[in-house]
Image (cartoon, rainbow, N blue to C red):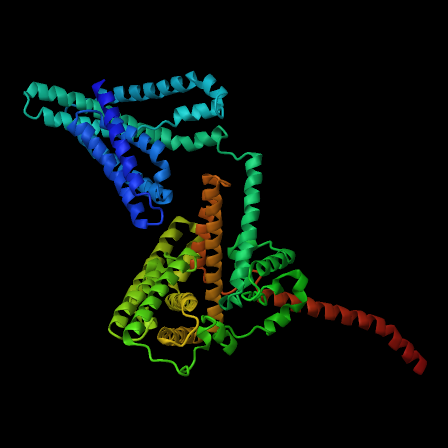
Length: 639
């Protein structure tokens, strides 16, 4: 009674104290207070357990549970950021469960080696395991009539699975560990008989707890999945299937809107739509009417002064309604990144593009102001890379993180250069971490990983092995890396220029002069990246950018799926399958080296030319058939 009621009293006291602390830190606009709230919950939980268990000699587990209940009921509205709080405690839960099971496994192995553990105890363990499961079945089916009539209700299948799926683990192992440690310390100086008798009891207790935990994990845990399918509880109902189909249609519409929005970017002017269809299944069956509707919706959602028409010249030939213009579209394809118009439009903000020469009557900016302006621009570049990571344009997993590390560390090097009075030179700084040795190491890791995957999956063994043996593989990956680096670099500068342009738009004062100087330096850095793009092979450049475009679309699709899960439209298991498929597609895109995909524009043009030639041949044969009698009549008349 003292242990239970005393634990409740201690938990109430610490719970009210934690609620008061959360109230004092309830400033939702300050991220630092959010961190302090998370720290307070962790510190108070351990302090509650220590005070109740060690200092007061009461139940620490009960005290912590009561403290949590009080905090949840009275301080739930005081949490500044629930996402941060839930994310941290979910991570901490996994870490502590791992530690508990690791310690429990080591102690359980040590106990089995003790002479106090007898062979007959194995039989008792199995009998106890059967009794534990039988007791759980009796308890749940005993209250089954009541549960069936209250709340949401239940059925015998759900009750049966709940009885079988009751796993034992963390709490029992924790209490057994604490008891074994306590008894070992208390009876260390006791008589030999008493110490052996106490150790024998704790050994058998911990052995039974650890054994039952192991058996429930191995037997109940592994058989829960097949049992769930056998009972039909994992099958989706017809209503859920309709909801999933509606969610898929909504995701397709959103993804088509993202597709149109991305096609307004000059970078993706000549994306191979056959490749998009291959790597983005939701866009595989898009009709011309849906495409037209998406273009109109995109135009209505943008201010007329900011509207940019999408570049659909390379997309329209794939639709039957525009099939007559396929060949002409192919012949009219411009030089991507090679024409002056494309170069002028890529990566400059509206005002930055016209910053040329020295402005008249413009004061010379001071060195300190110019340094601060450059440092501000560098921080905006850092924010630009973070924005690309958030929107899926910069994948942290690309090249084992080498691409992200190379780009995101360039602002650090630029910061040091600017502090020394040097101008902006982050294009060269982005090459600092990109040594040939590091890239070769990443290439070898990717190749070895592909070989290991091929050994597991025989379906891809030949493709991966062939790619690994090709001498061009390394050069292709290096070229792809440089192209992606240049694209992300230009986009980050575009982001920084637009943000800086919003703050320093007008005026000829000293700040505006510093703004123009930084813009000129940024334009010079962009030209360096463009020169690298211009030096690449046109087909290889289009191939890399098309795959990059598909990866962005898949990341956007994953974000839409996550939003549906968070809003409750999709269940966790439904969304998990979709996210797993998207992850597989992204990995496939990174490994794809095919120059042409099935249904590409070249194949369509060849088919169209073949059809045209066939029609001309048939028309010629028909004309020959009709003209032949006429020639014979003329010959007879002549004779």
